[in-house]
Length: 77
Image (cartoon, rainbow, N blue to C red):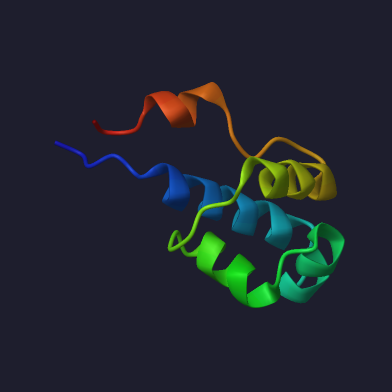
């Protein structure tokens, strides 16, 4: 059976993918969201999560939602 990704890993991958699509460095995104580049690296690697406030700023900065109902429903119990 395929193992399901945790929410932290899924969100981190979505953030990294969108940042790379925009051709932004971590430093650029961190400046736009008031999140340190070091913490952003931890988020992108699935080692840390974001508060709802930080997630909202991140979503606005990259111009799209980085979460959706599907990623929440696919978490293993």
